[in-house]
Structure formats: C-alpha cells, structure tokens
Image (cartoon, one colour):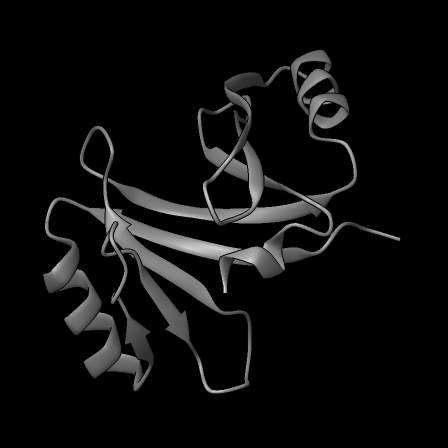
Length: 121
C-alpha cells in the first residue's frame, strides 16, 4: 500500500498575509497562536490539514509531507532514484520528526516519521 500524504505547508515572506489570504479564500481556521507563529490549518474535517508559515529561506513555496516508518531509509532511496537529501531527520521541538528531500527536478518533499505527527497538534 502506498504511503499517505499527511500534511502540507505553504510558506512565504509574509506568513500573516498568507494565513489571512487562505483563511478568507477557503474558509479555513488558521491558528498561529504559538511561539513560531506557525499557522496550523484546520480545513473543517474535509481533506488534509496543513500549515502556513514564514519561509526559512528563499521566496517560499508549497510542500507536501508523506508519512514513512524510517526517514533515513527513504532519504537513501530518494538519492538512489536521482533525488537528494535537503535536510536529514530532525525532531521539531514539541512536534513531529521530519526530513526533506528534493526530487530529480528540485521539488522539495517532506517526510514525517510515522507516529510523530500527532505531537504537532
């Protein structure tokens, strides 16, 4: 069985503006009441919830996150298939354990270690 997409993220230079835009456009509840002002998006029980945040580098973009059991194994597989590791496995304080890879065209994909996503809520 395929691995599920469990989260998505939109990042940009002005996270507050993006949070308001998407909340108004799609009627999403966005809660950025946390020290990082990371906007946790609740889509109202339909679809996959996500996040809207400030870009850590560059102009930002859209990333989707796939849940896997072993982050390092999937990073090695991605590299074997022509991708590359962008960020090795790291634990977000109070949140999930994640890693980032780039596909052969440079698109950034997030990996979330199975069983750690619930810590982000």
